[in-house]
Image (cartoon, rainbow, N blue to C red):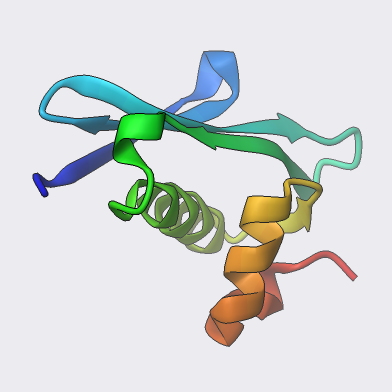
Length: 97
């Protein structure tokens, strides 16, 4: 598989993954009324990219950005993001209490 490139489209409140210039998936988020929280609401990956690590790249990049900024905790309403965090315990400290 080619490299996955993930960017934060802040105005659309979504992280977007591209593979070879083609949009392969996205993770939607909302900035909560509580300014200390980011809520991940939905992650989708195109059928032709499933099983290729696109969802994991989205989750890792988004959560690494949250950690680097150090301003917010994560509310994982999206089942994919919640499951990814469950499988990667080193990200569980980002979850809102």
